[in-house]
Length: 607
Ligand code: M6R
Image (cartoon, rainbow, N blue to C red; front, side, top):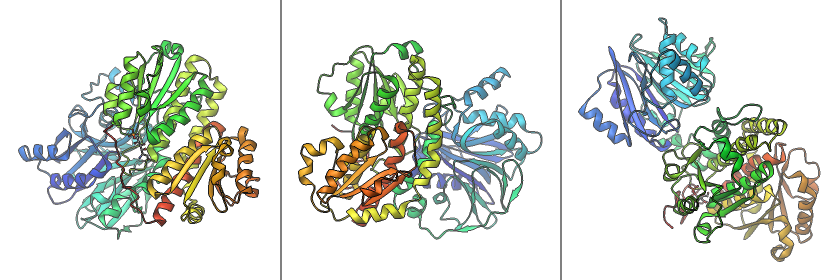
């Protein structure tokens, strides 16, 4: 996720901006840049690490006490010097940095091109510089307002112009922005750690607000107008806590980022009728109509996302779909048709096994689609099509938000193909689109049930073994819940289809054995309850993940973790969140290093 910095005050801006950007490095980035005004606007930017930008500033310094800076995590356009922020308008009088995505970027770009505008970069950001300059009529604040009225999406935008020196104007639409209040100087940043060593007094800019920053402080207004009296927040956190946004661990922070991640993954890609536009999925309608089988390959959590994908594709597309662990597929001589589509799923895009399986699929003539979180990763470079998950950098080894984004991306892919093949009618597509649009609010709601989840964690923390069961999509979720628990709590756990229990594992269920059952699939509800009964009869301790209006489950379960009612097809999205939180709380009670579990690496780049 991009990082933003701004400074207005008496000191030289460039070193302060550079320092702030370094402190935002933990957010992940692929290029960095700064712009300073001093009569004119000067920009320095470079692909790669901040050290490259620092070298550039050493050889070609910037002089001026007002400036903006940015670390970019590519979304539109590959990582490069040209695509790095800041971006200026053609006159070079207006300069912007931005975080997030402009959903209607393509149509805005075409409109501006029709008016004769030319662009240097492939970014959506550069369009904003052009828009602000076009709207400018002596008042930067008004120009920014007019520009953002045209730009749809979830983003934070920061603008500076040489016509009004001494001022930075910024807008928050979902993507975070904070103001740091100093003595005769003011800072702007996407996150508190950037300036925590300079001030402890902050103004938090909320969604839908505009802020005008000067050396005397900041004025916050609604985007549509109307001044807001925001209370100053005094922060006592240390720098490490601040990087985690006040959360105790990155994993918890990332779990809490999920509502915003769902919004980002969907942004600009889906209309209310279920028509999906996937910018880097290049195959044409003919291919979408004609391919005859789907392969999904991945490892770990990404494989579990693929299991959900298999069911989505099966139900929506009726195409034969295989999901294979990449480390198995690469050696098992898969019978891949040359008319197939292979979806390789990988958060990092660098997992050695997944790359090997993806290459094998390509060699056998399959078209390769990379479903990944990292722009420019090896997988994305080798694929024919790319579907970026837009979850932002995931720091905790235990994957959470990337998994959720992988699920959302697969619903989008299924809609894109299903509409073309004519197997997903308007009614079904609209229903799925509606369900997806509800998810950010539903996931948000789930994050407020921490007390029930802590209680469930207490109930299993001392167990020797924990079992997860479910049927269909619920089984796929159970697999992910079990992996989360084992990797961070080091508790032995196993997931299986609920119907499989009686074929062996039931022998291990004795008095007090925890069994976690996922119950979002209504068509299979009674069948799953039969397995729950078998567990209960042996004294097992049942913890259920069930819909909020399920009024039967309390008869069978010792504890119930409630999730908002959803269409069966979308059930896994909400159901996984309590399981992520459960794993987190068990690991916390057991006193483990949650973000860096023993023996595990974030990205497994060796076989
Ligand atoms: O980067 P990838 O998605 O390819 O990584 C695959 C697995 O190594 C990864 O999902 C792993 O299972 C996670 N640590 C699970 O939380």
